[in-house]
Length: 358
Image (tube, rainbow, N blue to C red; front, side):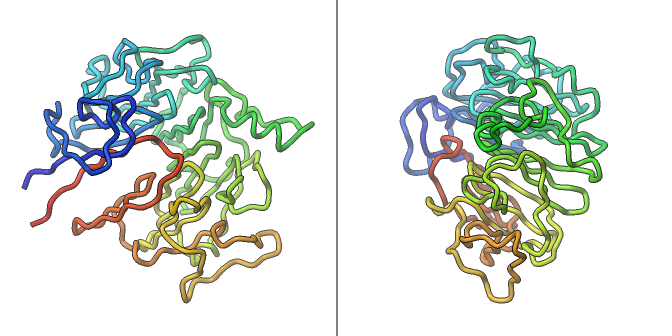
């Protein structure tokens, strides 16, 4: 059976690609999709816009376009997935959608950006207004292997394992939490700036949320920094200005193979397939109760003793073996089953692809 693309959720800007702007409560299949569903490689979304990458490296976009975040050289909202023709000379590898901007990684390791630059989130400081056509971030000299976009900041991991951040979206939180102290340059930079505190590790993957950032090293360790309002950084500090390692004790002494970040919570999967969640939980986004499964060790060192179990990574046994995790959160399993849970303030709307297994 042919794969079918379904969409549901908030749709104020047409970000579901259904051809209208009405909110959708029940999953609806998309008709007249410009690309074939079996060709879709990945789907992601931002504050009000969505992006699809095909196996051929083409980028299709729809939704909110007030600041040119769709990269279509205009500012009209787009109600159906539309090919971004200005990228026809590139093979798009990855897309990260922020609140009102888009970061695009192409196969050669170059990074382009478009949309709002009000907080320097495009990494191109000479652009003063909205950017309607994706522009190369010239200051990224090294080949990039992974990108991420937060509310108003962005990240890139290079081939050599460096992490760079730009956009001032986290700066106001940092200033309030560290009054009178000098902030690291990467928190106020409007072009890519190397993260201090990661010099001795090699990062392979990055993730971003509203006001925090995450990196995963080649040795399977997680480092986090930024706002800790909901305990998502596993620290007693309200804001971390430099990367802090989350100890392996929290993950049953296993290495992390993948990490995803929601608005104010985190999901990690170990190399053996165990899924851990932690952070904000008032909308059910952790997919669990505040209890520790039998057999899991909880680190109780004094500097890491936390008041709430929601602030500690805890495994969700029913999710072990998940093949893919998305922000809101949908868990995919190899045999075609999926779970969907959580909600609250997150990227608006939901677009997923399902393959029916006979």
